[in-house]
Image (cartoon, rainbow, N blue to C red; front, side, top):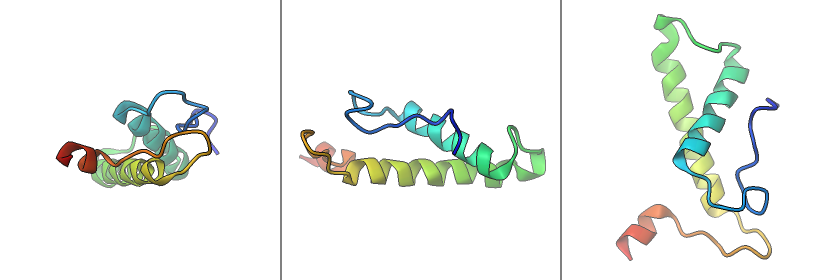
Length: 82
């Protein structure tokens, strides 16, 4: 796996991962898998969509993880409505 991708869950990352943290990890992942640091113009749309989808999957994963000694996170949408 790409060494530039850091662990985003507590206690490795003591504070909650930001959207920027998640997006940076998603970008590194897509770059590694695709083999492109910056895609050609004709691949830009699919590249960007992949980054968005990986970032969303990462958010869902982090929201759903239960880690001993760390309070369970509530999804942003649920917190906003409470």
